[in-house]
Image (cartoon, rainbow, N blue to C red; front, side):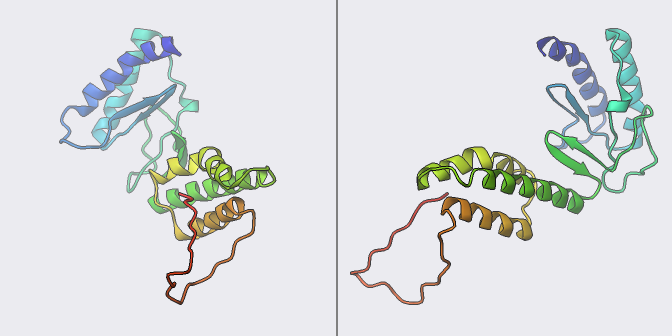
Length: 200
């Protein structure tokens, strides 16, 4: 992996320098790399014509070949779905850094949260019979069951229909099914004791 990181560095720098030229100052990235996943964001047709030249120059210098069959091009927004680059297949969706990216933001939110919700609930109920006390269950669910949920939540908004389902599953796991929903309609007196559990 270290040799791969060294070998891919010229492609990263060349893509950034060439594609960034002429762009207005923008917070959006040009190229991102994680392990062996390379993501390049193209903003117009002119940049589409530059990318094949960048890839060809890198291939000639490094003797590395770009596997177009393992690559994918995902048109975002109103980008023409017929405009391909280097014969890279056009797809409606692709997984980038653990997030399924789609042309429609609404569709992307729904797909990612439907998958994350289902997998989180499966993980929760897989451990439902473990013998743990309340604080151990809270620690366990935060670290092991909800780690992917926290990651997705930093990127995409959580729709109400999925938050409701997840809230029920988490409550059932933490309280082992023994919880009652009630509304306090009276003002507590000085003699009443109120207990709360910090489950955040």
